Amino acid sequence: HMGQAVQKMCPMCLIENGNDGKLQVIPQALKALAQIDQRVVVVAVVGLYRTGKSYLMNKLAGKRKGFALGATVQSKTKGIWMWCVPHPVKEGHTLVLLDTEGLGDVEKGDAKNDIWIFSLAVLLSSTLVYNSMGTIDNDAIQRLHYVTELTEHIKVKSKADNEDESIEFVRIFPSFVWTVRDFTLTLEFDGKPVTADEYLDKSLQLKNGHSKKVQEYNMPRSCLRNFFPSRKCFVFERPAATEKMKELSELSDRELEPSFVEQANEFCDYIYNKAEIKTLKGGIPVTGRLLGNLAKVYVDTICSNQVPCLENAVQALSQIENANAVQRAVAHYRAKMGEWVVFPTETQEELSQIHGTMVKEALKIFIENSFKDEDQKHQLELMKVLQKEYEAICDKNIQESKKVCQSIIKRVFQPLEDRLSSGSYMSPGGYRKYSQDIQNYIRKYRSEHGRGVMAEETLKEYLEGKKKTGETILAADQSLTEAEHQMEVERARTRALEQEKQAAKEKAEIYERMIKDQQHTYNENVEQLLKKMEEERISAMREHERVVEAKLKEQHDLLKEGFKEKAELLQKDIDGLNRQREKEQVESPSLFSTILDNVGQAASLFLPGILPKVGGMAVSYMSRFFK
Image (cartoon, rainbow, N blue to C red; front, side, top):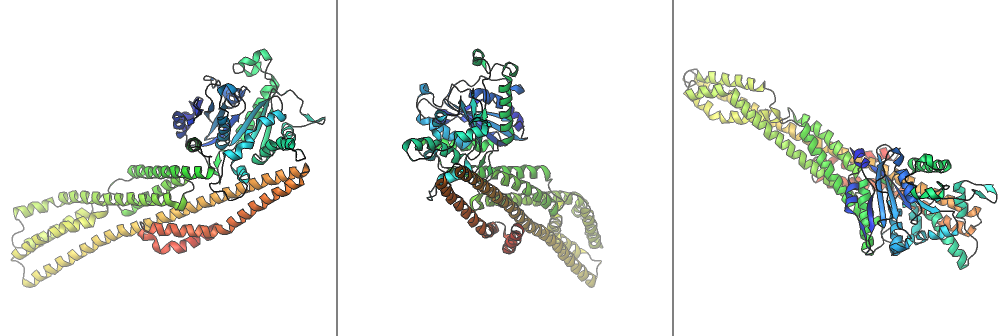
């Protein structure tokens, strides 16, 4: 049904840049995003107003696939508009298109918010498309001055540890695509043909020298190269003759220049196939709901006159998401137990097996929807709640079993009760008849189905209530000798003890099974937690490799362009990154075992059945993950 929900969405304003100079997130847009549980690929298109961005947006949204264009987003509201569509290539993903409206629009006033809008587009997207007209000349690059200001408008870590934050930018920034519209030149450099990507790289080459002028020239170029290691360029010729240009959105592909259509299709294919899903630092995948919360956290920060900080945002988000994940997991467990358990279950084992399956499913839901669960606080909370739920279900199972057994006893032993009422056992030989009848009815009772886990306990309680009656009948039976009388007393006592034993065994089975369940639950938790930690470790490693690779490429380019000093400075960054990585790898195993010990200790407070195995378990799990 997610696909359906996405299908019907029209473009809507996500972040409004109000006339009062205040940014605000539109609640309706948050509501729409909250419906999207799928992972999102977020493509933001930025560029000065009137550069024909809406054509690209419509093209990406698949207008040609019968997407009638709702009101084309005219430059109405300043801010960021969004359009969610099912991803045309990645099954089960949603493509979120963000369109920045009114950048550099003098009439709309308040340029101060332009940089915030640009920063938000960078923070929220996984691919940033910068759209400009004409050529990539110095003017076009200087217009991207927003990039040079990003360091003042985005923080990655909450406390500065003196390292240059722009190293961190590479981890979290989107990939960068420059689209040049109405491109009139031939793609060549010094008379040699070049690709669009080479054209962009040449345009971003630095100049030698230290004068103010050279610094101003180099600044935006350095920033683009440093912050956006993955850069791609597409050039588009004029789509149609000038007089037709006004109604570009009305024209069908047949009425446009074939080369333009081909270029537009190439661009779309690239975005569909190469634009990655949005992730948070550490490679945590973002869903629609998470994206909405992220936008809200950032805008709230900006409105309180602070600089959005990624670490704090992720911290705040993980609290919201993890609490939500616990609720969803518990709701799943409740619903499934309600669906599968028919009270009373024949055995405790039957209940235990359903419980085991549902705990596993609930945990999976929690693990998939949670991240950065500090000290496993939320996972422990989930364990605790599920244990309580299960205990309540076991309790209900016991009560239901008792009820059923009591009504079976009432039915099966009714003839006995009738004879007692009519006094038919109060005669010579009455006691043996009474005793025989009871044994027959017990056999009949035990052959009944669906009695559940308290069959012997309930029988024991009934028979205890008959003890006095039996003694009275025995005392009144004159046909027995003294010795026979004594023998019957002994036999009754033996039977009562035997019944006691059966009831105790039944209770022990329930208890032992519940203890086993605690151990199973705990093992399942550790198993899934370790798997998740291992996945996170691999994600972090991939992210690290990507950053180092980007830095090495930049270093290679600098050396090629003759900037030896700059290349040496970069080496410091690279060494720093590698040191940090090595430190993490050394600490990783001991971190794992510390976490497991803490989880074990915390869990044993509400899972008393698990204590002895905690230490040894951590070790055996560890050896599997760190071969």
